[in-house]
Length: 460
Image (cartoon, rainbow, N blue to C red):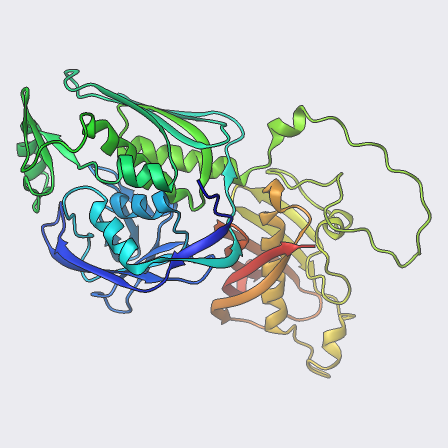
């Protein structure tokens, strides 16, 4: 099997039309190529502004019989089969355009989506693919569903599927790669038990369901328009769902998943916990690592500056950073270091402080006799504080944060000499080298500026 080291997208668009399984709505769907680091996005072209929803577990809105993503007033139901197709063949970046709220179900598997991908073709991109290696075991238990992931050098899934009565209990274990995905998993169709149908209909689900797009189990009989595609097709479809749901982490994963009676709720909970592990320092690994050797004394020029990412600095929840520590983390120096201290780090949020002195060099020209801190430097302060928060991920330590874009920018009040700028930042997206954050600057408790910023981490 060829190991793909670069990100991949589609060569050209491909389209398909059908009906949604649960909504019953007619829908036209198009797969589109996307730029590196875009990830997978769903675009509702039937709604004003054509809103997009990133395939991110943070946007999971419901997991009842399928996985639903929601952002603002936009929703996309039953995303798992499309996501599984992209993840199975290694598509990192693509846009899925739909003119309704659910992809066409086709035959209940990912086979039709695979035809779309083959029609579009796969294109490699220059940017490197970042694969996450699970470093410590994670276990989730929700109701009858138990799903765990363990460190492994491959992406492997071992699954047991059964209903509450123990009927059609099936077991399957497989290493997932593009070849095994398409040959062994992609064609496995969704299924349900006959006695569930009435409940699903009353719940407003399976409005587009039929024997054309699902297998129905009634007692010991299997109702289908064609023979089973695999003797153990049901457990293979459960594996398909796991692949799709876990892709909401946003990066390929290496690890061994072991699942018993998996569900979308349990799958998505595992994805959330993997993402949480991805974002926190690898403290367990550091605990058992040998201590670093003592630094060798050596003379160096007085102007030589210590490289960011010094071994004695880490960024963790609950800690505060003074200016000396910040200067070991950020590469910025006078006159562009816009953070004097960090007072709070908690999960995806951080608070920094900038004491605005009359001696700031920008006041000489902005403006003489009426000094005001430039608004762009407030954005720079937000980006710098966000960059510190990104360094909670140990694999990012020593990298530099490059300010790329700002959206929804608002400047509300002037910042003058003597003000203390409080910079509150929430990290809203961290995928690979790209970070997005929402920042607000305050003086005396009142917002003076705010913005959504995007930045890229590069090697120092």
